[in-house]
Image (tube, rainbow, N blue to C red; front, side, top):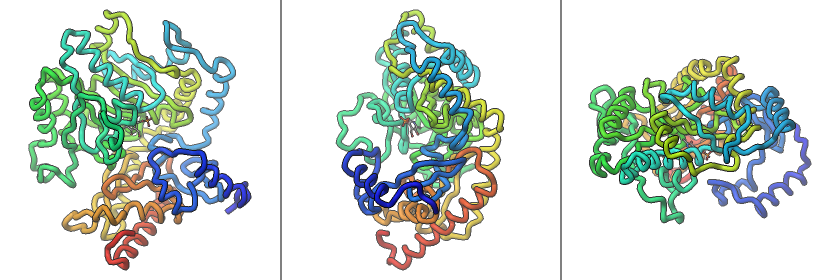
Length: 463
Ligand code: PLP
C-alpha cells in the first residue's frame, strides 16, 4: 500500500471535512466512529484508491453510474477539447450548439419512446421534476387541468428536488422537509420474494399490477396524470418486477389515459443488459427520465425523453417555461457522446447481461445461511440478507446487519453499499472481467461470513 499523502495531510483533510463539509445522506456519527470520512482520490477501471493508498473494487460503480470505468482517456479528451472550443452556451432563448443537437438526435433514436424529443437536465432529480411538470403541462394544455395527480410506488427513489422528493418513498427522505409537493401518491411495489399480497410467483394474477389500477380508481382516473416507476427499483433494493408487470401496467395506463413515466436514471444506457430497463419487457413509456450512465458520471448530465403526443400541445402552445442553466451543457454533451461510443464499441450492454448473470450465479453458490435472495438483471443486483433463509425472516432493523457487512467490506477491499432492508448493492462497472468478479465475490463472502459470526457471537443483537 503506497500513499502519495503523508499521515499529517490525511489527518488534516479529515479534520477539514468535519469542519467544512456537509455530506449528502451520510451518517455523521458513523463518520465520527470511523475517525473521519473515507477519502477516495483516484481510480482505474472498476477500482478506486483511498488517500491511504488502499485499493477497493467499487461494487456500486459510484452511485450506479460508472458504466465504462474510471480513467477513460477518450472521454477526458472529448470533454477537454469541447471545453477549449466552447465550454458553455445556453439552450434558452432559441440558442443551442452542435453537440446538443447531435446528442438529442442520438437519444431520440435510441429510446423506446414514440416520436421522442429530448429535454436536457443536469441530473436525475431535475429529470424527475421536469417529467412531472411535463405530465401536468400535457393535461393542462389539452383541456384537462384537473388530471394532475402522480402515482408512484413504495421503495421508490426518484431524487431530492421537491417533486422528486415527493415521488420518493424511502425512510427519512420526507422527515423535516414537509410540506411536500401536493398530488403525489404511492402504491405497493412488486417484489415476488417478499410479495405484499402473499402470492407465489407464477401462481398469481399480478396483484401488484392490479394495485396500480386500484390506486387510479381510488383517486379517480379523471384526476390521474401519470404513473411513475423505476423499471428496476435501484436504491430501494435492486428489485426486478415479474415479467408480466409492466405490460399489464401499460394496458392499465392506456385504459385510463394515464401517462407511463419510466425513471431510467439507473437503468438507462445499458445497466440492465438492454439499452433501457423497460425494454426488458417490451414496453414503451410516454416519458423517460435519464441521467447517470449518460456520461458514466464523468460530468453531470440528465435528460427527459417525451413522446410526440406530449410535445405536440407544447408546440401549439409555443413555449416550455422550464429549464436549467446547464441544460444541454456542451462539455457534458461531448462526454456523453464519447461515453456512449465506448459502450457501443466494447459491447458493454451485452457485457452487463452476461457478466451480471455470472455474478449472480457465483453469489448464489456461496454457502452462507444468511443469504436469502440474490436478485437482479444485468448489472443491477441485490443480495438480500435474512435472519432465516427458510422462513425469509428479516433481521431486526436494530441489528444493522447489511451495514456491518458493508463496514467489513471496506476493511476487505470493497466499496459495498447497504441498501434498505438489509440488501447489498452489487452494480459494478459494466466493464468488469470474470477475474474481477471472482475477487469481488471472494471478498463479499469473507465480509458476510465475518458479520454472521459476529451476529451469532453477539447474541443476535446490534452489530
Ligand atoms: N432517479 C433514480 C432512479 C435514482 O436512482 C436517482 C439517484 O440515485 C435519481 C433519480 C436522482 O438522481 P440525482 O442524484 O442525479 O439527482
